[in-house]
Amino acid sequence: MSNYKIFLKSGNCSYCNNNLIIQRKYSGENLCPECFQKNIEKIVYKTISKYKMLKKEDKIVVALSGGKDSITLLYNLNKIQNRIHHSRPIKALIIDEGIQDYRERSIKKATEFCKRNGIEYKIISFKERIGITLDEIIKIKRKTTDYKYACNYCAAIRRRLLNDGAKELGGTVLAMGHNLTDFAETYLMNILYKRLDIIANQYFFKEENLKLEQFYIKKISPLIRIPEEEIFLYANIKKFDYYASHCVYREQDPIIRRRVLDFIQECKKYSPEIEFNLLQGFLELSETLYHHREKMNYNTCQNCGYPCGRGKLCTYCTYLKEFSH
Ligand code: SF4
Ligand SMILES: [Zn+2]
Ligand SMILES: [Zn+2]
Image: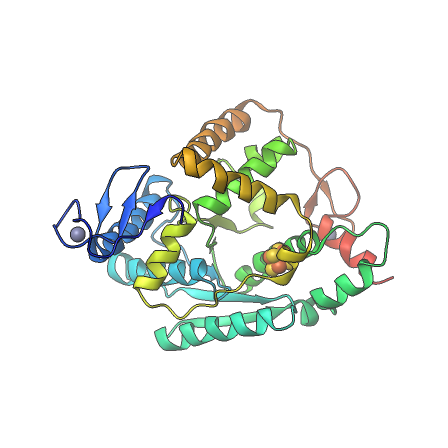
């Protein structure tokens, strides 16, 4: 909570004179719970329209984990959809990687939220789709010399299952709960590892590419202008019943991602606007790279037919092949 002073009865809201709950150092605003909540909902709505994330006819599938971010996202999208568009109902997609204790509990929170709010959901598990849980993968791979840490396997497989699951649910857009802090962390990682193709590919206003759209559903992240701490505060003010613990693998593996996050948190103490600068930097860099970088030629994966890099198999199929040995 370094960037946020939580005040109890010691100051007034910049907008209504009630007692404030948060002081935003990066903007100088003081907000009471009511104004803060409305402001967060306004940011979500404005982010969607500013970056043209949705069309009226879109069918939204929300990637739901049961944590504060995805529940906040689902709640807000559902509200916007009901109020403004009156369009087709949102569905939720839950991925069960097979992480003992952690995932069962978060799935329980996710499904309870859906039931309470009358939202249709589907659960897809690693076990049912690829025949093995993440815990089993890690047990096998940890003994090998080419072990790549749990998050690498998990993210590549989950990405594919989310994409396929959202298509199966008839979605045209997959909404992800990434907040500004997640975004800043990922962007900095991409810079550190010189993943310029990925940055170019994340440009928000890409032209339609029918060839790629056959395979990949459009992804949107309506929370990317809200720092993690504010989602936390919002979810608590709204009294959402979410799952608060972190995945054990993120704590156990010495992944650089965590160090990057610690670095950002440290910088925020002195430069509260740092995450917003990273987002702005990304917007400009991704646009430049998208227009000026030579477009990469994709191979087609020999196993699944999806576009892949320069090899014969995509990352997903490469991993599946490894696990079957
Ligand atoms: S922290 Fe890593 S292993 Fe755990 S759910 Fe996230 S990506 Fe998967
Ligand atoms: Zn107020
Ligand atoms: Zn493949």
